[in-house]
Amino acid sequence: MNAGSGKKGAIDGGPQGTKRIRDALVHRESVVPGVGGPQMMSERTIFIARHGSREDFEDPQWAQRAEYPHDPDLTAAGIREAQQLAQRVAREPIAYLYSSPYLRAVHTAYWCAEALGLSIRIEAGFGEWRNAEWFAYLPRTHALRELKERFPTVDDHYRSLVEPGFPESKSESIRRFGWTIDETLRRTVGNLLIVGHGATVEGIGMTLLHGNFNPSADPASLCRLDLEGGSWRQRFLNDTSHLDANIASR
Image 1: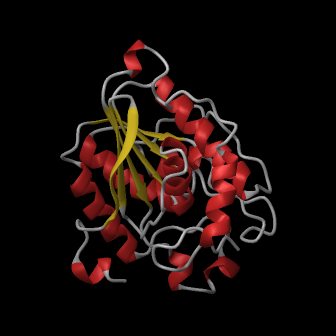
Image 2: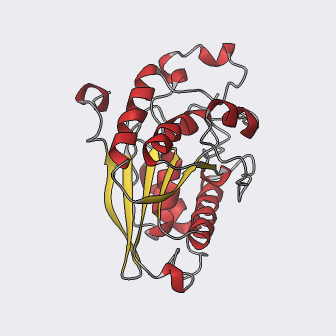
Image 3: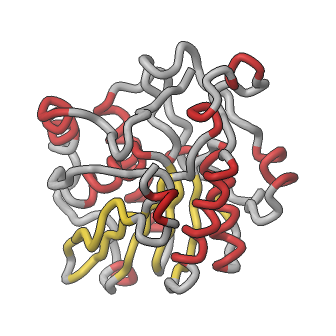
């Protein structure tokens, strides 16, 4: 079963994990991601949100009954978290909304899409790290058609840029997140909201900040990265101020 990290805010532990990630970034181009052409030189912002609380963490037996044991939905509390996240991002000038293909992320993105009046681009390149310690076999997620039927704001014309391999090492996942965010930035103009996982926050942050990033992401938390003067800077990380106090303390 895809356990991911059950610890609040935890993503990948220890100095060795950070060193492996930084090593994975050594071979990247020296140009600043997202500054690949004249239209990219203006200031822009990326918001990265982690999905809300997932049902298999609340019900440990859930996967044994599930048709998609690696693709849990949100809990009731997770839905409330997603709604409060949506209220938070609704005041931001966001041009594009991307989501990991995992149901918990798409369900979270759905509420954001409703608040922002945007469609959801399902991008596997922003999906969960395919860690062999979390997945005994290739994880199966809901098909795009199924997601569109349940969440009408899903853009079923958009085609994912990446199909992650399995299994993935840590460095492979970081390179995958890095390539996906670089390519997404080159193909778009304006601010982005990306709804994904703790690994998504980590991979994008480590890429754009060239390894100078200490990742942390609680459920429905928000990270903001700004492109200013040709360099990406972290504005805030793991912000849960939009959540009810009793939810944020979970």
